[in-house]
Length: 160
Image (cartoon, rainbow, N blue to C red; front, side, top):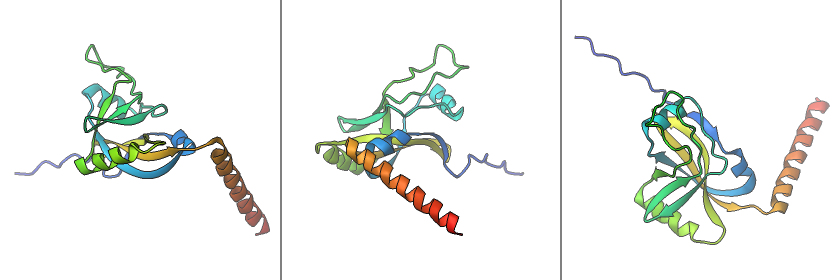
């Protein structure tokens, strides 16, 4: 008897959403990959490529990490079983990672922000970052550095 081939779920990560604003507003200190506890309609909506991480943040409560304010719109083909778009979602991390994050977020000025949402091996994952908020002058400094780098690259291209 011939064996059925297992359906390929795509080995590489398929990015659904990215939070570019987080890299602008925060100094990223460390990143973690966490699984998400989702309902069926949330997964279908994510597979359609619909999600927004803009106002999202993670919080640790009672030894569990929860993702808040991440918008996953209702599945268009869903019925009364559809999910609430901005409901808190539980993140799956190892106990040691949660303890480490809890200790670090208790320090002043540190928070957990989602950077990207993607599928890896058919499972929904979120990349969260331990981050420290930037001041306004830090943001201006980063923009000035980026502009200077672009100018140098342009000058080098013109010389060739």
